[in-house]
Structures are given as structure tokens and as C-alpha cells.
Length: 488
View 1 (cartoon, rainbow, N blue to C red):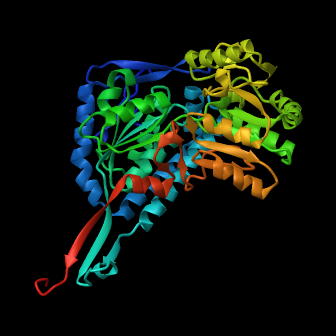
View 2 (tube, rainbow, N blue to C red):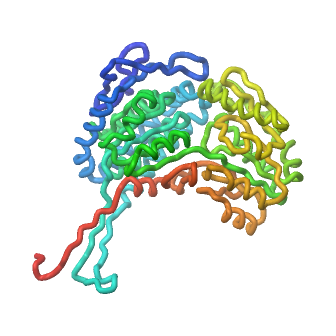
View 3 (tube, rainbow, N blue to C red):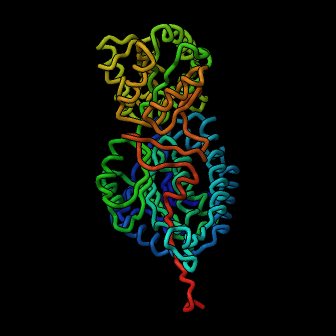
């Protein structure tokens, strides 16, 4: 089934022009499992020449794919969805070992990706042009008619992250492809094997040669070269704010979609159902060890509310399963040592400045205990920096307005949660929060995938969600008919 394993000893190759190739330098990057340190495989360390070749090939195949009827593009998506579901367990096992995601969540990611493909196909088939009469505008003429259709932008560079290498790859690929673009997929190094399996699925489903090419390799070596390549017409990136800002500076006039970091706040009001809020906050903060941009990353609550929440949160934190993702642990090893070091630096800074550790606060290798910290203040790094790990700070505020002010002082603006039983308060707070999405009585989270998903400030640019992403990666093209005596 999977054709990207092109050599012995777990040696993978990249998809190029419908076949599988190694780097021209014959160099490879080793991928080790964060679960047990075992060698997952070797992916090609592609060169700038390889990038040139992949982009050129995608450009050459663009006219054919752009002229392919949408219903035929959609047929490929339906077939890919069937293949993903048929191989969900197999692909999930790779995900579990490559990025230390628990097996249940890994299977869900694969199946969610299949659903995304089907829905994108359906939405793509419903996109239609429009005819605009010239006499709708003052001074216009009914003898002018503009036919407006959507056409592809060209070749899309899709850069996916380590934490959802299947789902966040397809969320870029599918809207681009259904819109008639060709795509160059550059997955994160950790997660590249999973992404290559996804590319193999798309090829097996009938995607024509050269419509999707993949590039693996270190961003430090080819990253800047790819994002400044003259053959790239759109960049769709998910990753850190630091890298996103760097790409934005380099990209000049190339349109971008950036999904970056977050510091999502959960504001809990006195009238909230405290048990319900605690359940949602724990799920939102600690799933996949907090390695999600939409994880709940701080609680803002008044003293009396915090006093009610802390024992409830503590009881739930101590029940979280910690350890091996193959045993469906929720708290799993972080993706690498650097990530664990960073989380611990935030915890240590908070402790040194007077915060109180309620649970956790220790590590074993890359496995950081689920950590709950009370009495965090705005002088502490943990109040502002995104940990991307299993640590949840509680900031005590004097009133609702202070909670709103602290939430808005963040450089990030992805999502926030508000827990209350008062509809007026919910809308009042939601209208003041400077974020892309406000969740009322729910944890911060991505999806459903047809909802708009966006961040403001340092959390990103552009709007995701199936329809919105298709529109972002296509453009209107107008053909004006002048219906006078000279037109036959």
C-alpha cells in the first residue's frame, strides 16, 4: 500500500512527479521516537536543487490540474478518505510513536482527516461563479455583464507542524487542491514520516503526478529558500509565532495564511457551574500534554472562584494518566528535550517569584508532570509566554474587567473561554475580548472544521475553515461581456 519506504532500514523518500525519490545529495535526517528513543526512520535531507525541481514540476502540472473538473478532483478526495479510514489503525500507530500522541487521539486524527477530505470535496463542488449585470451600478449599462469565476492562485507551499502532521497537513492540502492549485508540502521534521504516509494515500487515491510534491529537510537549511522561492504563489504555515513572523518578513507580497501561537485564557465567573468548568478546563489544558495552540493556557478568576476551582482542578489533575502514549496516557513525553527545558524554565520562574505549585512541577526526561500553579502574577513569564506543555497557571483578579484587561494584554489573540450562566455577561465579555474566537461554556478548541478558525495579533493571519481556506487560496477572475451590436 505505502510506497514511500523506498529503501532498506526504514529509509523514506519524497513524492515527486508521481514517484518516490531521495535527496540529490543522498543525505538523510534521522527521526527518533520521543516515546522510547527508537529510530523511526530516515527522511531525505533535500537540497535547494531538490526544491527547485519540485517547484518547477508543480508549476508544469498546474495547467492540467486547474482544468480538471471539480467533480473529478472531488472523486480523488473521496477515495483518499476511504483509504485513510481503511488504514487508520496503521497510520495511528506511526503517529503514536513519531510524535508521542496517545493511540485514541491518533486514530481520531486520521478519521477526522477523512471527514475533512469529504467535506472539502462537497464544498468544492458547491462553489459557483456569478453573473453581475452592469446596470446594477449608477450609470452602468444592462449591455454589460461580468461573469466572475474563482481560479487557483498557482503553487501553494504548505508547511505543517509536528503536533497534527496528518490533520494539519490535509487542512492545507485539501482546500488548495480542490481549488485547482498544485501543492508543495513541507512537513515538520518530527512528523515528516506521518506526513509522507498521507502523501502516499493521496497518490494512491489517484492524484495526478506532480500535483502534490513533498519536501523534507531541516528548516534551517532550506526553510528560507522555500518561502522566498519565486515559484511559490501562496504560503500556508502552522507553527510558532517566531517562525511565522520570520516568514512574513521574507514573503514580501506573497499572500500568507499563518496559524501561530496562543495564550488562551479561561475566564470563570462566580455564577459558573464549577464542576463543569473544571472538567472542560482540564480537558482543554492537558490533552496531548498541552501541545496544542488552542490549549487552555491560563485561568483568570476572582479569589472566591479560584478557591472553589482549585480543589476541583487538583482532583482531576491527579487522575490524569501519565506515561506511554501506547497505553493511552494523556500526559505523554514532550516532543523533544528543548520543549521540556522551556516548560520547566517557566515553572521555575513562577516558583522563584512566589507562585504556589498545587500539583506536578517535576520532570523525568521529556515527561513533564501535569502541573497546576496558583497565585501566578503578571510579573511571571508563565502569565504571558506559551508553554506548549502540561502546565496551567491560575491568575487571581479583582473583577471581571481586570480579567478582560489581562486577557487582552497578551501579544496573542487566538481564543478565549468564558464560563458563566448569564447570557448577558457572556456576550459582554466576548465582545471585549481581542481574539479570533470566544468559546462560551466550553474549552478553547479547534473545529468543527467548517467553522472559521483564526487568530489576531501574534496568533496569525488569515481565516481557516474549509470554505474560508478555499476562498483564500483561489481568486476571483472577471470576464466582462459587452453586449452591443458588435457582439455575435
